[in-house]
Length: 154
Image (cartoon, rainbow, N blue to C red; front, side, top):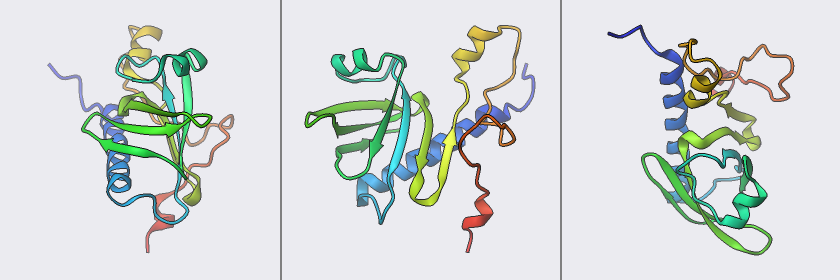
């Protein structure tokens, strides 16, 4: 029996769908104009694929920059493959969409932050049945800015 509408989970799915569509566009047409991305990844995610030396250097999370040089971008339903340059060493990565904790395009002041994964919620409080939530826009300890989408409508 359903407990109700899981808005938090639905919102996360929608936001990850937005990231998927953005990355599909970049795979087909490249990065337009000054667009570039800072993507923070949970490197402990079981489906995350990266070189052993990178995982040893970034055992919990890594922030990737997709800007001037990237190669082999292939977007799938659940994630994307990309080759990025780390100290003049091209490294292939596979990034599941649900391993992404932040996605920022500073060229247009756009950003998404995913507070907790469902597994994190289960570990922290098994009695708490709330769905994961996006960052609270009123939080004073956050350094980013939450931007209304109305600002970008023409």
